[in-house]
Image (cartoon, rainbow, N blue to C red; front, side, top):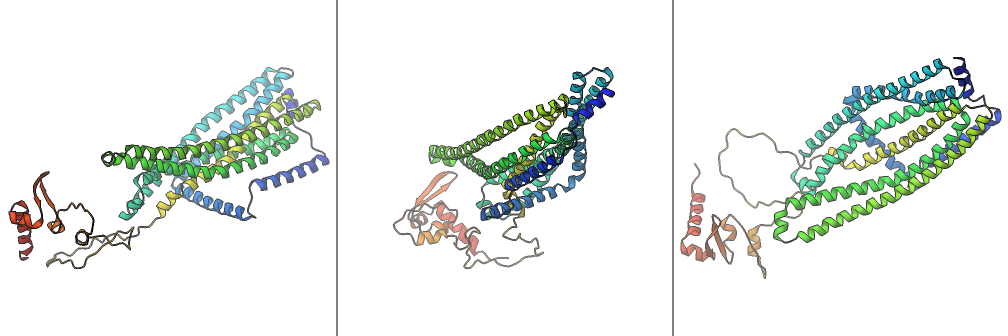
Length: 479
């Protein structure tokens, strides 16, 4: 144990002098300024608009979280397993550093076995609790998806008929299936990664400060820079994500409408026009994906350049600390592992938060459908026990809810006021076609008679007999 204690003390940095404290304070101030630039709170009109959008997205996110309240037991168990998995995983680089220090000095089998056993225990605990964490979060995701889809479908069933005339089936189906699934992931999977990264970041920051506060300070410079770049990329990604969602909904709606009405498309020989329309929607989607790929490539290039440059500076500083005896080789290796995971977790914290906001914003139409109230009241269920009398229609007019100011046309009015036009009328009422220039009477899919109303009545055929039958029914007294 003597070797391990010596290695442990040697692996920690000494207490910094006042000059280093002042340098640390100045650097922290610079980091704070950069961080404020990365996450502005307003100021300009554009910043105010972005802040308002962020506040709306946060409100929607909190609403999704409220939908997860019935799963608080599952989420609580998942958070417990997450904390334990992160704790065990954080100890692994520290154990690796101790093994390297033991092997680089005078070998002692007892200390080596103890370090290997501790590392194996941490690996086993991390694997076990990570599996339990993932299972509990996936269970919560399934329950949340079921709950949101049931609520949305139930509210859709309450809407008036004109609502389904204004909204295409493909678009509503996309909201019900695709967007609700994204909403569920924003709470389950993203919160899983967010909490795991947060717990691991706190644990690794503790070990990094214990190993070397100088290297930790250098690492902290990298985080705000990456956060600024990631935040800028998230703002662009929000816009492209919404455009891509609209393109997907348009493509789904177009494909559904064409396939569902293939008889009509074939009868008008409109296959080429529909193929051209579908190709246009695919081209618009391709343009959005191309812009998204360009933004992603530029973002990755800048981020990689900053990461590699600061790693080189960190290695130079680590060499100086080892030369001065302030840091051991194993501790430097452990710090490198921590630094890599630390930057990765910070990326997750910034990226996942932005992705959660993007997901919620892209699902805003789901919330609109959930909150929509029917424009027309449902019919009542009261009915008299006995109803007698005659029902008479006088000056009855109607209009569609989507066009309240446009009265629906009467076919008889069209035939009466027709001038210099050819109108084809298909009707089941004889009164509708009585004034037509030419009447074709069909029965069983075959033409039985044709001519004017006067001619058909004079022939006393099927048209005449049907007319007399309907007249007799209308003149019969009511009992």
